[in-house]
Amino acid sequence: MLARSLFLFMALFFASIVTTQSAWAQFTEDDVTADDTYDPFADYSEFEASADEEADIHFFRNGRFFNFAFMLGGRFFTSTLGQLNSPAPVYGMNMTYFFDIRTALQVSFTHGEHKFNLNSGTNSDGDYPGLSGNNALTSISIDMKYYFNTANITRGFADLNPYIIGGFSVNHRTIKFAAEDVLIKSSPNGVQLGAGLEVPIARNKMYLAFQAMYNYVNFPDENEQIQTTESGLQTQHPTHVYPRGDFVEGYLILGINF
Image 1 (tube, rainbow, N blue to C red):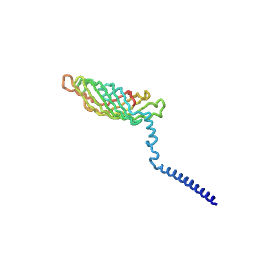
Image 2: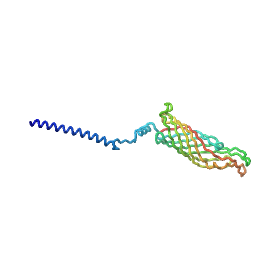
Image 3: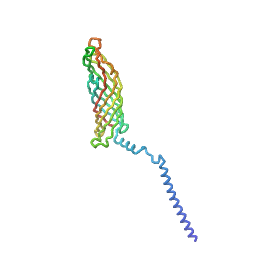
Image 4: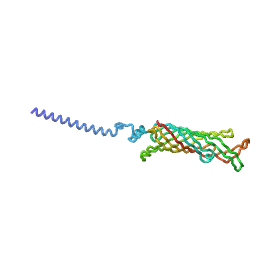
């Protein structure tokens, strides 16, 4: 009788232990699940969303940190300045820093020299002599670039990198006339906007690009009439010509990616 009572007591004791452990395990699992919902550190990640993580991985694998490029092209003026200044070759260089795979900051330096020529003519005040010289224009510009996504375009065009570019420039202009010891110097600011297309070469270590820019510049003498002086005389001849206009540039660019 004592043995049966002892056996029954042991059976009930072990059964109660198993039931308690099962209930505790269920309570702990539910409690942790509930806490995880509100715990900001339960699943900590450096990225706010999977899209950000994917973008950063894509940038580190396929993007560029910065590049250095040589520029060679041409420049021509518009309006009246286009009649006074001949088109001329332009050369320069630029350096670009990439914030991410789509946006970048570019600093450029360009220089070119144009032949300045005002033909002799007649106006309401009579005849006036011609005027010729040299116009040297150097530009330093800071621009933002934005590259378009071509991943969803036909495979043959997916490697192309079209972009738009725009920013501000400082333009140092020096005009020297051939027959007179006269220099005209000015450094007006300008606003520019353009577009380009890059083609990767040498396994993406280099690129070849074409870029076209329109430069809006307010030269200080745009509203001043050009006057010429006849050789040997001090009399100035008004020409009724006002040197107004902007300039357009086109470049072939060879760059190195880093």
